[in-house]
Image (cartoon, rainbow, N blue to C red; front, side):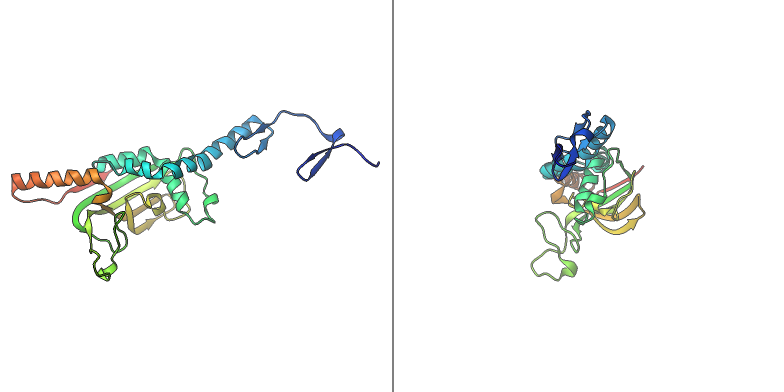
Length: 231
């Protein structure tokens, strides 16, 4: 047959007589091309969750965390968590090992439900395995010059997620101000011991200081702050 005319795209060649002009849809972010509008819209929805949301999270993590850490009490923390479930899902994804991140596609209807949440204030919350931002850990008191605890709260958190996670679930709260300790769970339900440090939660810390003064003035002593939530 010899020489023919063909369309060239990257390394593919399509003979002109075999080509057909059709309407298609190209994603402005990935340049992927789709034959139907349904496939295109599905791709956009997935991209929005797994890429655009991730970019927003990365650029605004500290700002959003500051909003979360400004909650004044336990009820507000529980509500904020449930109202911002997708933020915690993205946080979990970003804290997975790099080789696993693409395996977890964040559902746009992902929900995080708090089942139990309890806190007890302690002037010497353990820093053996975690510490407040700007602080230092001191496992077993082995580091001279480093305190063996910081003001904060110890307690427990039990929660359920609408979709299975890749890890143990603790990645949801990593670096958010809620430090998870011992615990674990199944694919959609987990329970952990937790530690919150007062310097990471300034509004709650301020409330504790005011409550302490009021308790001492009225009762002559300070009763440690306690909080318990059951859904």
